[in-house]
Amino acid sequence: MLYESQLAEYQHKGHLTINGFYSPQTVTLIIDEINNWADQTRAELGENDQRWYLEQNVPAGVSLFRKLDNPIYNRAILRQLIVTPKLLSIAEQLIGKGLTVFFSQVFMKPARYGGPKPVHQDNYYFGPEDEDRVLTVWMAIDNATLENGCLYYGDGSHHTGVHQHIAPPDEPFNLMVPAEIAAQYPMTPAPVSAGGISLHHGSTFHQSSENRSEFPRRALAMHFIPQDMPLVNPALEYDLSVVVSF
Ligand SMILES: O=C(O)CCC(=O)C(=O)O
Image 1: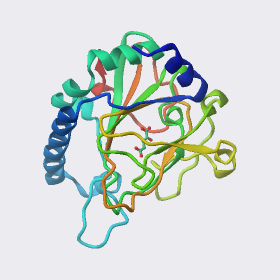
Image 2 (image 1 turned 45 degrees about the horizontal axis):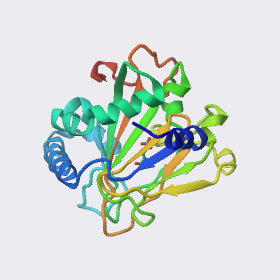
Image 3 (image 1 turned 90 degrees about the horizontal axis):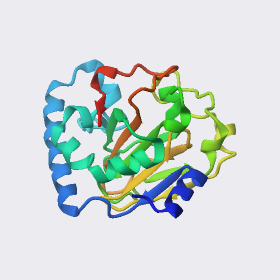
């Protein structure tokens, strides 16, 4: 359970980091399973999927995953290792009981070629009925540092509502807060050790930089909402047949 001070920090800043949440042994099992899954997925990846799933700015002949979708739905081993009763009780403390992970993602951010993620609000992507009942739990699989592209958050930005986002013409999925709005919320880094978690409110501005270091910065993000809450205005199509309820 979260302490009062942790709850207050989440409410005030819109994010909270807890180091040492998963054991090193658990992290090793998670890495093994993600590697197995990436190998299987690579063999099945169609041409159209490559822009979404693979890093684009890589030298010829290099093929690196940018992300994998819905680990909590697709991989029972990851679900069991990660969505523990301890994690669920924290999520329930923050957004109430009867939860679902309606979408989850592994961000691979590989060494040297990992691309940036611009400033955005998850709630613009998801369009939930109640913006205060969306919680992202971001688990660090590797040490996430300033060098390899840890998350940065705009403290308090979750109190400002959901802002209109824009996207580069050739990347409709790369939604971002316009620069003049993002500039009003200075971003502070949130480094997390492998096995730690960083929790954020669905409306908190966040971003991560490119990874030019020699170390990967893998992370697994889970997006929790109440089971009975509709997404009324999502920016992308979400496949709600893959939700996992707890
Ligand atoms: O891991 C990243 O770089 C981006 C994560 C993110 O946008 C999220 O968890 O909502």
